Structure formats: C-alpha cells, structure tokens
Length: 144
Image 1: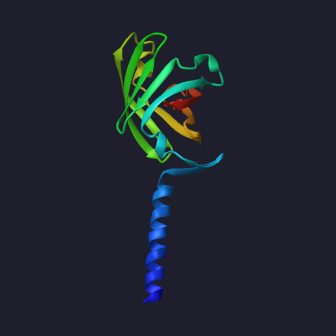
Image 2 (image 1 turned 90 degrees about the vertical axis):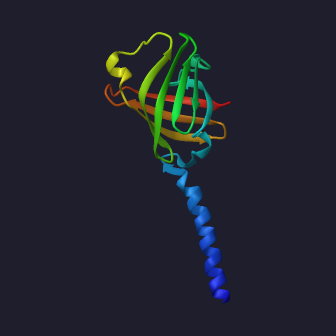
Image 3 (image 1 turned 180 degrees about the vertical axis):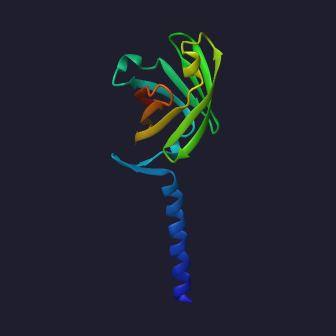
C-alpha cells in the first residue's frame, strides 16, 4: 500500500513537470519559458541591434491572432498565428487594416517564421525569417 502511494505521488510530480516542460524550449541559451509571452501587448525595444526603433512598433498577440501597429506610418496589420512548438510560431494571412501597404504583393502574402531565442522576465528576443524573401531580422520586445 505504501509503495502504491509513493508511485502515485511520483506520477503526480512527473505530470506537473510535464506541463512545465511543454512550455519550455532548450536552445543555445539554455532552457527558456515561453508561455508568458504567447499572449499580451509588446513594444519593440530594438531591431537588429538598433535601439532607434524603440517604441515605434507594438504587437498585440492573442491565442489565434497577432495585430501589429507601426507608429511612424500609422499602419495596422493583422496576422493569423500558429504555434509550432513551445517557443516558435508562424504568422500568415497578413491583412492590412489601416495605412499604406509598404510591402510588395508577394511579401504581403508571405509566411513569417518566428523563434523566441531568449526570455528574461518581461523581455524576449526573437528571430523572424520571411519564407519567400529569406529576409531575417532579430528583435527585442518588452511586455506592457
């Protein structure tokens, strides 16, 4: 009876650990936790190491959508979002909501692959790659 109780307790502990691990990713920076940044409002801190872009770009991410606000040209666009792993997602079906489309027609229809590579409290760094153009960028965002 005692050994059955121990087995049950170990199983419960293991299941709790499994849930935690489902939202983590091991990468070159170590184990990172991404569940807290799957939803929320985020402001751009830097783009490709350039801090002059700070607060010029805002993202609102929900379970199925990501809305992007580009402040300097008053553009708003919306994407569908699909998480492909605990710390990776794709953006697709881009729709211009407001403003002028500065993207080419081909780029507007492109899929954007995103991988979160670093998380530290309310900040995260991600690498984005556009499927068609192979354009790669690195951005740092802070959660509001």
